[in-house]
Image (tube, rainbow, N blue to C red; front, side):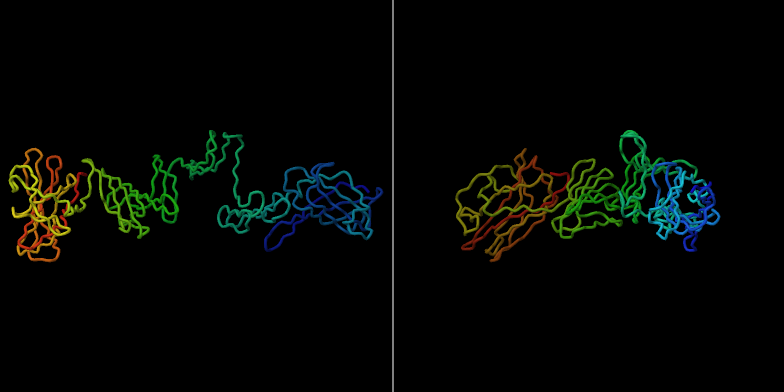
Length: 497
């Protein structure tokens, strides 16, 4: 049997649901047997190859049973899958046998017709159809690429939601990969990136490997800024002047958390209570209203702020809430925010002494007096018959502190005031002794008293003075006076001592 030259044409099978193009085509030819037109029923097998002889079969074998041939002419439907999408040559090979009642799938008895027939452009037009869907070369999926009525293109989806809508595969060599941009140069010279252009064709930026000198991946802007944006607005901006900004503008109070786990550090700016600046805090940051927000109310907080020629240091106690300013630096130096403090001197620290001239306001040294009696347990003793006892103790105060008041903690059983405590100072240049203030107990009290006396504007100057406490105690009969302690209250002021 020898074939005559074949005439081929394409038949389309459409469905109203998808309008998808079928890969089947109608094959019409003439079959001769022994040089004369054949008649009867024949089984036929169709294959597609990539070469005229030998080569590789492309796609499946189409097997057609009981093809009716009359006067040599026959017509049948052939489907070898989507083998015509490639631009490479394709050749059709046909096997024929007279029908013996066997299925065409049984391979015995076939004669291969020669030569193979080159598939012309008419059936290959399936690869360039005007349909709105393209199938994969092997036919699965049928609608690998879809274009809808709005011009939206879907890859992996028949219902694209935007200009290009890609649904990534769940399987394969790189599941989840939806876009690949690959350069052609070897090594670090390779460049592969996606460019972005405005309406007049000027590039505004790109994403990818845009350097021929290394393998860096860039998020780059050629004109404006590079912005990291969330539903809360612009949280990070790389400006075209080379600066980096946290937050959207000067009126924004965004914060940048530093660390993880149990670390609650924050970098924030534009805190109205402190003026514009950069603030580094722990466990606290400023909100848009300028109030400190404490993350863990049961923990301590701290803050360092820099702005407008001032660096501030603030802290709270372990359970102190928002940080409070404790010290700051400005052009005049380092300063401490006024803080009230106490210094206490136990009664046992007082030593019995007399002035050479026992009064303030006169120059003189101090001499030890050893003719005193002893008092009850826990007291410093009471004077003997020589008169009221004078007892002295050193007083250490920070330089620059401002004294506020002195207090005495004592028991005075006599009917008059018999326990006096004074703050005094001795000039290191003149030896002049000056009383700063005095407080005293009331008489006839068997309970401990805590009277205090106000000191007016006394600023400690340890360069020119030395400070001390003087206690004067008197007794009458069997009455006993007990001096438990003396306390001095002061405020630390700037500059820092």
